[in-house]
Image (tube, rainbow, N blue to C red; front, top):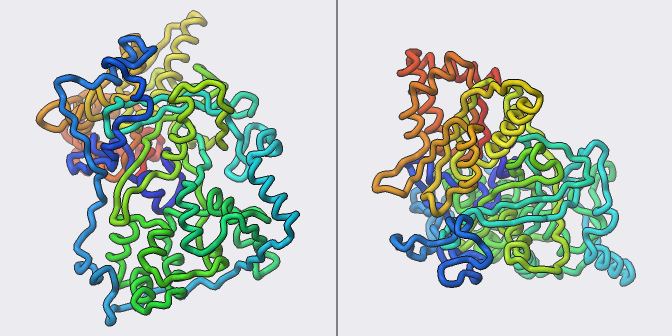
Length: 560
């Protein structure tokens, strides 16, 4: 099993984490990335003077300089399309009086009891502890063998940050480096780093205000069953601000029908209650898919849409899911730097019927990295809670002589940078030991819009190719010409070579990136190559890839 590199297992991953950068560069059924053109002039662009970024040499400005021959209009946020609501049973956003509510689950029984702290000294102590968070106990925590977790992470220091995309692009890919020195963490290429994000502070304040709750209120939570802990993700005691910032999922909770069902029970307007119940019913499956999964409302969006809803705090805490960590593929290698891990992520913005939205984790990390991005001096260190998630099968082959085929458009290339750095180190070590480095054939398929816009890690990949660590660098620029070119098109051009490597030389095939479209198109390209150039036929090609998957020679790490 391979964990998705851009999000840990959430049904709906905070809106735009599910819409990963690069998906429009690898599929013909293209969906524009939901990035705000108004934010295309990214932080740091203020330093641009006379067409150059201060302090950078010509080579490093290649992605920063907007080509004079290109007109790039500022674009509005691309909205998630809303379908005709009557087609799935709603009228004016509400379920009709005669709506079929059969199959709706009963409301979840509340197993949470909430007590409000009234002792001023206890309240002051809780506030002081939270204001100092993370405190010495968190910062000094060291796990045996570097085995940290979401509950007890390592508080790393953010030591480097840069944008890998042109400042004028409405796409923003952020490269980050975390210092893990002294943590005991030992990673390999293919592993992922887990990050524990925070909800946006304005969203937290607005949600609490809508619920008529005070952020500074300190609560104690207990279960109705003393032997059970229904909310292990919420500390006791804590303020509502802390719980709603660090512990509760406020943006992906609409994907849970149990949340909708509980909200329905606390609506005074019959049409609001009926609509929320309809969304959880059998007849409301399509409405639920469109209105909840596709449009991805936050808890605040739901409360504002169904204005008569006034859920009590205990009922909310009973059903709201915990705020999940996000996983990002490590893009460097321990041979390069064992004391740091690097990641590449898309900073996500998109628009729904409820308005503009941001990715929870990516936007939070973007804000945290701003002092580094702006080159500020003398600022306090930026600490981020992290833990290691080891890959089970998505890792560089131990046999250097085995051929390897890597397909990773957009940020899907991140782990393959680590693979290639590992490969470089292995070749160098063999040479140092007086052995002839017998490195197998290697292919990397990467896709982006344009070379001067979002070709991430361009100089490094080209250098790896030039020196021979990477045998074949195949890059698809989807918008550099009149017709669209994606990675599967380049694979089709190389079909004979790919079929030969898979069928006759035991090549390893790795795919990373968008699972909604790209992975399917890449799989189809592999099937066609084996069927036509390998003479297996479609059925035989499918069977071959199935066996390769069982042997961990065909491994996918994708998200959708």
